Length: 334
Length: 282
Picture (tube, rainbow over the protein chains, first blue to last red):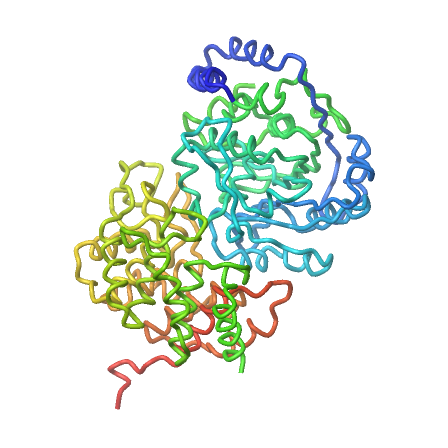
């Protein structure tokens, strides 16, 4: 990462302040289009009415649409990273649903891969309590899936090459670094600080709590959006499957309300997938600052550069409520 | 007896240098400190764990979380507790110096947050905000070392009480974010209440003990269960401790053995019978 690239991204970040006021959005869109010159990605939106649907078959259909085949996956150790934040009785929309995790694991096994589940919760240190209360532990049992607590894993220090934060190095779990494939399994939610939380923000949950604390305050202090980009650049995830069967609107990521969207969203490129999810939520992807920061660097986010497979966005899109603060208003400029 | 199984597993791990998290090779400061406390509480040898902890202690008295990392050094509080319990005064004194020299960073108050962000406790990582668990750990260690009256401990107590949720209990350290009150967690509530043990009873503590008593019987996860039991015992509240510990150990499901889990459960078992309160004494 050259200094000039770092500086240009920082300049973009400063420029994004203009979006929040509504002025200059056209200019930024033009800039992003230029940055994405030649970048393309495919994202598949698959209808899934509820958690009793044949989700494994739906995931396999998504793999087919996106050209994910056995030859690519046989024998690979695949890390599945769900979004397990907290648990609360009667509020399963906080976390990636266990049925989705189970279906994805089984689909990867169909392609000859060896999946396992890994998470490092940002709020609760006791991973096993979250697994028990969320029902995930039953899915692990049912599918004989191993779970790795990334908060307490051995660690590896890697240089922070993208350098949007001031962190010289990032501390990553050894299990993550050694996995052959890293797959984000987020819940589609609004987020009271980041605007949108989906496949990319989900990777806050790979940063080991023993090094970053609970909540992972170092990352918030360095800037949520900048941290999201730095972490994703370092992790270089291979795939994402977002649980949009029931999402969350309002005061996400934990206190919001359930919002049925009726779909799974799949893709190899995470900025493209998150931008699609924002559009499914009726929100402007450019209002979630980490997405324009990722544009042209980690992937495309502009609609014209994302090839849509499966169901058209317009068929499923629903307007998600967002908390009304200055830092979230640009999300509604659609 | 399940406690003997836990203690044997811990003792073997210290002998074989396999007390990293999940009994991986190498060590972790948290496992060494809690392991020494658990072994010591049951009359077992603690020298290997404590000697190792002392080798990890840096010039400023702090102890990093893992040998491979220079920072963060939040396990220093737990090490202080272990050193003090074993009478290792010199190592304890250095840990005290470290804790009194480090604090969480206050930030300007914001209408978006319910807590008083100017109050100072302890942080997980240097130069970040104060949070419930590291403040609870520091208070436990400093109280054990006879420093409960130190100005920093008084400020830490004030911070913890400010972060207590209106309905009782603590989460990681926020109360309200924007318009919603957050939810309590058993483990953080246990740590906070243990850090406050010895303080006068106030409604926030009473409500938090009520929350733990209502929650503890549903817990199987070792960390939440153990800190809850330790706190209830410290505040002389009854709980079916041994029954719950047995269930947790005998039905781990896919949960692999971990020295921190084993140490916490064994430590909780050592304090299972609450001492009678003064009113209950004959």
